[in-house]
Image 1 (spheres, rainbow, N blue to C red):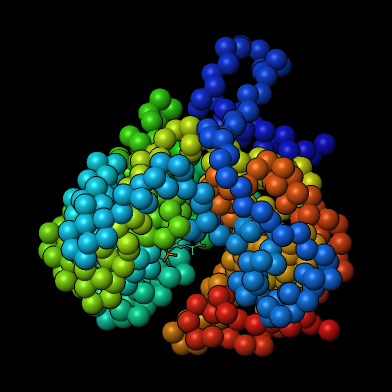
Image 2 (cartoon, rainbow, N blue to C red):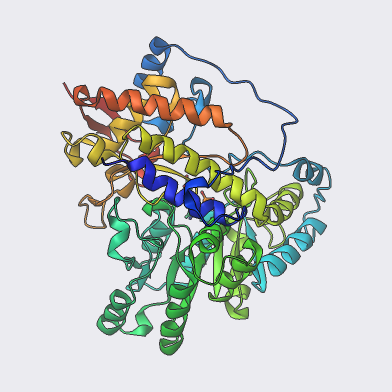
Length: 487
Ligand code: F0G
């Protein structure tokens, strides 16, 4: 009998190995040792329960786009893991230590020291969030006509590359575009693809390689240290920089610890530092891994790039010692970074995601495999095979899940992919709905409700019709596009 749940538990067994060695030679008697949260709840935020009629109206008003729903109309919010984390008591205490001086805030120097200690990058420029850093970096390093190879695109990252006159080229391994492929490191770079680009364009037209850890659009899939080392060797030979999108680097380190030979006994903190050491600089959206509601930075090892970034941040974000953030935000970020590389924190964080993924698999819901670090990505092409991609199956599915239970998810397919410079639509292979799990926010019971709701929608999938787009904004259309149901 084909039992998909069993395969997931094999993965779970690997997961357990990282922190609960069970002395047992006979696999028949392995007792599962569950993760549990390494924290307890001190304050709660009440949620609003809604009726199906209420949700139907809210969805119509939102143009069938979950981004346009009011948060008050949402029960469990899985739109994103960005800026939605619960901060710890220590982070909140840190907020009270905000030094709100215009220049030279003590919180900036604390943050700078933490970035140097934990990540190893030399120079820090704070920004209001990740895309602020992407903007500055793209403007400094990219000239019109340049090529920026990367391990799959991210929406804001690619847009800033394009606005600076560059062109993104995907060099992720082919396995990453196949939702069912179980490759343990689907974030890896295909070095042959990169070499081909270098040959075609010449190294001087490639200002840097854009490498994300825990690749968001691939389903939160990790890159291995082995692959990063090979990439480092190749780029060194050609004198090309590697810039790291380190938004979810600690989650990537977790998977290295669980899956890569030689890393089982290394701490997440050690692995994070090794990852960063194989790159020349980074952009960070601290709203994810680093457990804050707002914040980001650019961090580099190269003095020249730093100097230019320090000049430019004043134009776009704020003075170089606050970059659009309050002192208290920088303090919360410094503390959050330290908490993010704690092994117990990360095991529970990813453990919760795996718990939800296994439930989905048990219900037969098609999801991206292996289960990623920050959420479950449901394969909408497989879930709704009768809806062609131009009728937005992932957008449709996100709307249906909201209607069923008030759970808000996000489209990551043809709408998110947007249009090319020549106006044509990108048609990505992956047409996904992301169930993103905020950090330290929801309980296991919430995970049960989410899986059950998705299973109910799956049961009536054949009756579901697609959507048509009736309003399309010019940039990052997924945020504000509006849809209507097809008759
Ligand atoms: N890079 C990655 C990999 C991201 O996931 C994001 C944001 C950014 C850069 C941009 O950072 O939002 O702070 O400006 N991702 C959010 C998400 C929006 O929902 O995945 P930002």
